[in-house]
Image (cartoon, rainbow, N blue to C red; front, side, top):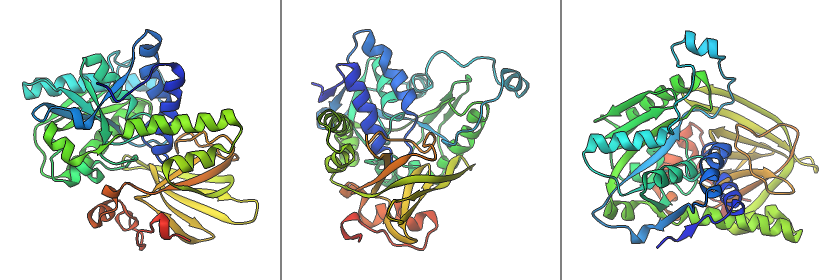
Length: 377
């Protein structure tokens, strides 16, 4: 029995909206996630997910995800692509579905279901669409409770489960199988290196990865349950507040167990694409004169207010439109708009000493301790 389903276009919009908030600035493109599921709903389909607790212990599951920098790099022209060795057109079959099929061929065994590595408006709906196309289950879980820039930060990776065997597939027809890899860090670098080739022609071209093959028993032990349902409920809370004429940002914060920590105008966004990631800073000035700065590596990770560090990963740092709580990814966030910054506590699995070492500010090179939302002043 499914624990959740998208029964209408309205459900889809709420689902995408909730996932974008939980994506903390990253997590894939909302337009791509919407485009993957909208035709299925319009054709009478019902994208749904199965509870983590109800999957078979001995069945085989894998993650599907996209990866690479989210920086808004202009695409090459068709002539430039052809001159650089790319085909004139993208492949029609989605890369995630191609990666899944190739992984099954490599394993010589069928995959019973799909799970997302992270929560995000691209990296959750697109695996759901691939699962529907393959006629297999989508599991209501994830391995981060938010979006993360590095697969090595996920609960499944930190448990010691190898990402290989894995398959990479992109829109240009590339298919690459990795039978083994010495370490998770090398695997991360490999994926990001491939993504720079895929996205050099068009940043919207997806590099998909099918990886982290586990049985149901293992997935139950290491995944976080209920993330897809949480995203749908969060999106519905925002929509309900809008209909009622109440503060949608406060409603979003309450639904996440967090709070709005800053409101103001985004006066500047600086960024660069480097090593397969988007790095940068967001500068938000409030009407009362206080100033916030948010450092990002694909996702948002540290908030300074008046030059004092106040909030950090692994807690969720989300930037939304100030009045409607419409969320943004850091790719599309425009300068000059009024925004609100919501901070919500990370799940307990992301607050262990091991998780903080992988996701906290020191991991990113800052001489700062993790600052939990509950003690931040």
